Image 1 (tube, rainbow, N blue to C red):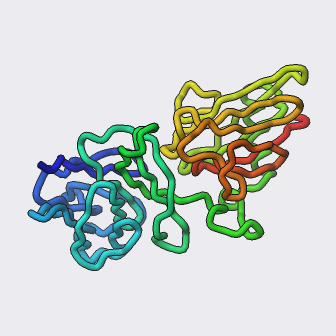
Image 2 (cartoon, rainbow, N blue to C red):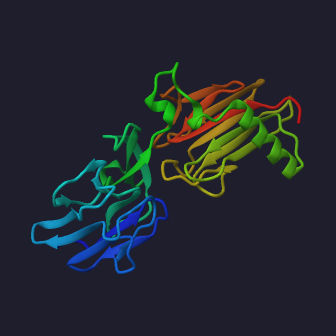
Length: 278
């Protein structure tokens, strides 16, 4: 027996049950799945239940329908884990019994010249339960050579310092150092750190709200990493996370942080800054 299916919007996380033989997708109010991002057609695409399975059809839309970042020209069968994109709005096809899971990052054929990654949801520790694929952009520097890479879409060290100063002013605190992270489609977030030179200190980073720096991103593990100050050094340590920590696209178990170092936690880019005076 086939489990009931749902479309999960990758931006809003809203879900629509596929509970009828045909589901119309588009800008029109008459559509069962309404999309607004970009410039969708009034009747953009249709999902059709057949004996062989679920199929998606593009209805001669202006900006196209994509399955796993490949534009379709004819009726295409889809399955759980596929990413369906209508214009600029993306959905993952899931079954009714799938719950919130940690996501594993990997590559998928890019829809345009920008790289993307497949994100496969799993039950944290049980990789055999891998089920869901979601399409998210990789950090820009992952797709470029080191000499050509631009951090966080062109964000500068100066901008990061400005953000740190703003947060310090709002919180009326002084920082010795700060980590600025840039979650996709969210404002930058800052972990400001102060220490006593004679003591060790540590700060936790992860998706769980009880971390010192919670990052609401499906690529981030619940308790992803720990940032430590010890022996006059700043060290970022991976906590056996699903997607790891990276510098220059390379996975690292630990990273010695220096002023201005650009890094990635999961797929989220960030920059570490020493703050001498605020």
